[in-house]
Each structure stands twice: as C-alpha cells, then as structure tokens.
Image (cartoon, rainbow, N blue to C red; front, top):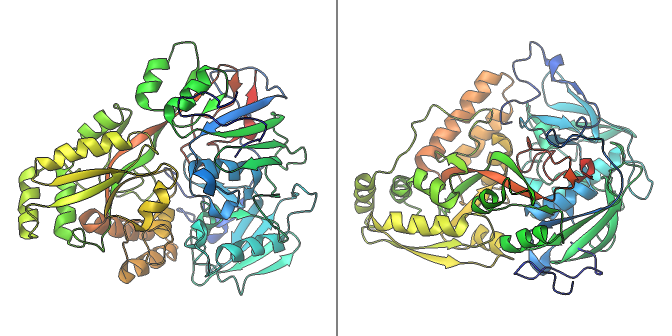
Length: 532
C-alpha cells in the first residue's frame, strides 16, 4: 500500500524519486461456566520496556514490508502475506485475536459464553463504530462470516469457520450473536481469532478504492505494490493511535528495507536477516527487535504427486535433512531446530516424539525400496523470505550425499506464495504463529484453502472434528497428539527450524512489542507505537 505522493523503493533501497501454550476456554475448567470470558479493551501500556518515556502523539510512521506486487488488495478476507495482514490489522478488527501465549483474546467481541453442550455460543459485541460512523452490529458480523464462507471463494479463514452453521446462526440483538455450530466445539474462540476472519460492514463495497473498517486507522490512499497511507481514527474503541498517519511502503528486497531505514526514509523495517541484525545490533544507528522462535521454517512436499506420493520418499527426505546445519547456515543460528511438526512450544504440541537427526544410510535404503535411487527433484524457492535461498542451497548439498539431485528453481517474489500452493512438488515454506488447531484446519484438511502439501485424508479430517468437539482438555490433547504422530510419520511438512522474527526500527520509534510472535495481536500493531 502507499501514498501516490511518495515514490516506491527501488531494489537498492533508495526511493525511486525521492499460545504458545494455553487456550483460554475449556482448558481444565471445573465447569462449563468457566468457558465464558469477559474482556477488557487494550493490551496495557503498549510501551517498549527498554525505551521508557511517555507516549507522544503525532507524526507519520513509514513501515517497509515485502509485498505482493500489482495484485495486492486491501480486502482483509484475501490477506495472505504478512504485509496484507499488517494492513488489514490497521484498518479492520476481528472478534478475537491471539495473545503471545496463542490464547484467544477479545477484540470486537466483549465476551463469549457457550451452552452446556458447546454447540451454541453467545457472543456479545463491544460498543464500536466503523470509520463512517456506523455502529458495528451483529448483522455486520454475520455478513462478514457468510462472505468468508462463500463456496465460490477461497478466502483464507473459510476452513476455520467450517464448524459454524451460518444459516442457523442469528442476531439476538444489535450487539449480540448466537452462533450455532454443526457439532460441539470446545475451542470456538480460536475460530473468532482465525487468521483473516475480519469484520467488515454489511454495506462494504470496493475494498481497494474505499475500505471502511473499525480498526485504529482509516483509509487515505492505496497503490498496489507500492504503498498505502492510513490516518488515525479518533473514534477507535480501543483508544485513538498515537500516530497521526501510518504509511506502508513496499520493498521486497531485504537490503532495500535496511537501506531505507538507515537512510531515514522509513522508521520500521519488517523481517531482517539474522546476519543484518547482528551487524547493526548495538551500532547506535537503529534498534533491533527479536521475536524469538516466531516462524516455522520448512520444506513442503506435495503428497499427491510423484515422487512424494510415496511415503517412503517423504520419510527419506525427513532423514536427509541436517536440521542443525540448516539453522546455522540459513538462519545464522537465530532460531532452533524443528522436528517436522508445526507449533513447537504451543499447546498440544507433541513434544514426546524423538528428535529426528540426519541418517543418510537409512534415507538411501528408503529411496531404494521406493525405486528412486537416482531421484532428481526441483526445489522451488525465492528471496521472498529470509533464509529461503540459503536453506535451498544447503539442502541441495545435503541431498547430494544421499544420491538425490535437487535442482533449485528461483521463483518470483511477487507471486511465490500463490505459485507454490498448487504448483511444483517441493518448495521452501514458512509460517507465523497460530494455534496448532488453526494450523491443522487451515492447511491440513481436505477442504483447506491453503493446503500446500495436498494432504487430503478423510479419516484425518474426522479426527480433527472429533478433537474440536471434545470438551475434556486431556482427551482433546490426546487426539491432537495422535494427528501429529501421523504427520510426523508420513506428512508433507519437513519442518527443520523455528526462526527468530527480526524487526528493525529507527531510534525514535517506541512501543514495538517484543513478546509478539508473527500473526499474533501485538505483532505489527501500530496503534500502540509512537515517535519520540
């Protein structure tokens, strides 16, 4: 997004002209009454503990993100990139969002409460208004969810909303909604907090020309692939932002974001490489914020296409990877090793499974059994994310030791994420934080709209539904562990690490939260940031 009055960044960084743990409901509660939650508005003082000082109002903050080219949109239900999510967060609100512990926290929803059988949930909205002054109502909520669930569309949050019977759900008052579920769902607040489940007005029109949300900033201008400008919304329910204006500047190259930050052309640079961060940390030129172990790093295998439709080949690739070498080389040590499962440290994570290590002899044995001794595969990668090209190069060398030839193919930074969803057979992949249940529902069910591994098994879908419907936390955890054991044995995600998420800011920026894994409430939360 961008303001037409400000030129875009060139690739050299100059302006072209200028839970983990925890689920808040149904976790060991003595009674179902403990499943209700009343929330307060805000996240505290929003200050950066190391900065101190009193928040000041005023100024424009310019934030540089990698973007998606001319196809970018401000439609919050189509948000896929981190830049999309940050822009959507500035303009719109969800009913709930995930805190640093990955527990759902109330946002537009003031509280929620289930019935005794967990198949009906009453949600009460807080008093909030859209940027045009209209109140946020139950009808807007139902309109938004029905739009996301449109069978003709492939909106990101569609799979997460699957448990909701939207035909039976109804407004029970101007600020109250009764959600009727297709089956008991103990973790329904995770649905409200799902990535992309933003609330838009029932009368919403062209999102790119005049988006109207209820978020902390209102729309000023947008040019896809370049930048966008938003202005403080004084009527925001959670308190008006400190900044007068917020500008998102698109800069796909990490070097461009860093150079712009050093040159004073932006005040916030999203996603820096570990090597860059180490070079500038303590230099006095900028501040480095590390969101520890925030992003899953993986190789993604298409499980329905040769050669990865043979589970023996997938298992061989699990054993080819030297995860410590990948973390050291691709992440410059700024992270920790993975074990082929998403969500290390989150609630329900199957941490009892043996840590995989490289075993080239067993990998060669499995490839021989699969008739793939002289296997040659193409690995898609791109400079779209930190460490991707380095990881591809390292894995290519590791695979060679097992007799596998890996051809690395560089993809477009603008279209990489859409290209790999259905294209190719093997690719570099990453993810920000979300509950394990959300990861499964959005990426690993037969009808998931972002199922990059093409993992489609109806019995696995049924296990997920059973877990969602299980009231007892320990019984539910056992089902999630069962699903993860299967993914560990035969899934399509080779999860080799969890990377620190690194942000650079100008010395004048205050209020950037460090305990905020990517995709959670306080990540890229510019309404709590100010300029000193």
